[in-house]
Amino acid sequence: MKDEIAWVTQAQQGNDEAFTHLVEEYQTHVYNLCYRMLGEPEAAEDAAQETFLRAYQNLHRYDQGRSFATWLLSIGAHYCIDRLRRRKLSMFSIDEENDDGTTFEIADASSPDPEAESVKREDRDRLHILLKGLDETDRAAIIMRYWYDYSEIEIAESLQLTVSAVKSRLHRARRALAGMWQEEKPLTRTERRVYESPAF
Amino acid sequence: MNHQPFEDWLLDDKPIEPKQKLALDAHLRICNYCSALAETGRALQSVKKVSPSAGFAARFQTRLAMQRVAERRRRLWGAVLFTFGGLVMLMWMAAPYLVSFFDSPATRITSLVGWGVFLVTTLRAMIQAGSVMLDVIPGFLPPFAWMVLVSAFAGISLLWSISIWRFVRFPRGV
View 1 (cartoon, chains in turn brown, orange):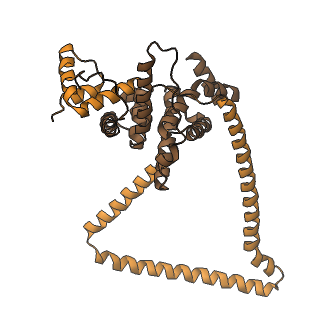
View 2 (spheres, chains in turn orange, purple; view 1 turned 90 degrees about the horizontal axis):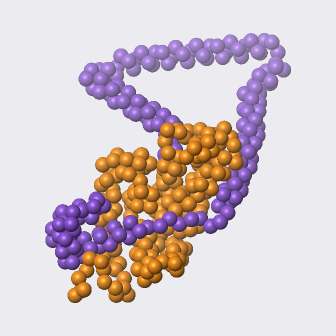
View 3 (cartoon, chains in turn cyan, yellow; view 1 turned 180 degrees about the vertical axis):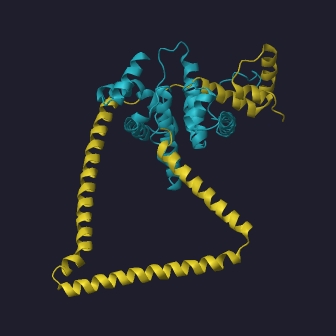
């Protein structure tokens, strides 16, 4: 934390090396948000680079009373939201674009229960695909809530929304995800769900 | 089917009492929607972050350097265009004076007087037109309508100024 403040201060004074430290520190943070928002690695790489570029150009506006990570994610989320809206405007289909480009996680061979891990991975992959069906701002709220453990207040601050709007967006997004999850239930899965009776 | 209070429990992501857990389990066995809500909730709780490919910071530095070159080039072209445009404008504005430099003193005085007369008559015409308008227009609208119009105009101007100020001061997300 101390290092981070020092790097930010030095970067604000024009030290590029300090900013590079910040890029190295937060690259996964920003890239993951962009990847979950845009759905494909190439677009995520470009968006993450653009996020850092915008942060670099606006470093003088950064208020050190705020968390640097939240500030970065706020820039990234807004950039991705704008990009998704432009895609919509240009009638570009996100599904057509992404079906081939999506990367999925590789199974963790060291896991004590590879089958359960495989099911979890399958669910995460499905979730990643279903995220694309959400409204851009709802998607950003869900990603911040579950991938970054952000509180509703932090999400509201990042997305420039009210706390009650965040709450209702999160609920709406969860309902929409559940609806899509039901519709796209994989037929190949034979294992019993946690909440299901063995009779089913 | 009534999904309450199970839907709220699932959406809130908060721990529930053992009694509530039993009721929830029973509901999930018969409700596909809540079951899907529970499954998505579990999937969301187990999400993982993905990292960029190696060399991200180095690629960023390259992009930053390219951006700086592009910015410098843009500034240079801007300065060249501004200077060139300024020179053309200056030449265009100065052309009549440069031409009149070669005229006789009598022609110069005549054109100067002509300009003066033109300015004075134009100003007088505008003042007259303005006073006629001020006499005629208020009669068309009652004072109350004028108040509403002026207030609306002031309000819109204020809103516009605040919007521009906010956009300049706080760009989205920064």
